[in-house]
Amino acid sequence: MYAKKASEQIDGASWDDNAPDSSLGEFFAQQKQELEHAMSEADVSDKFSTLVQDSFRAIMERYMDTLDRQIQKNQAIVQRLPHMAGSLRTESIDREAVYHAFQSAMASQTL
Image 1 (cartoon, rainbow, N blue to C red):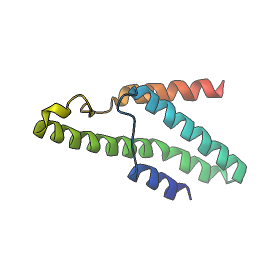
Image 2: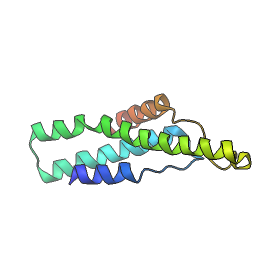
Image 3: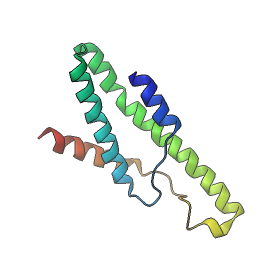
């Protein structure tokens, strides 16, 4: 179930072009908290829980990779149609900002 949901989210990855990248990190933190809660409710083994939680960073990376591929397509569009420059995101995801916001959000949720 977890793998299917993660795969669907990656395949349908989208993000508000006007939102700061840090909000993506906050989104990931919320997703991880929901996952942790669901696993505690399902009473899964500690070993399985650790395995799933350890895979979360890879899922974040794949999600951002998908967004970056969409951004690369935007860059190609803007090269062909310069008048689209202001309406499409052409800058790659700032992963450092995403991870910083993710870590901050996770830390504040555990306090």
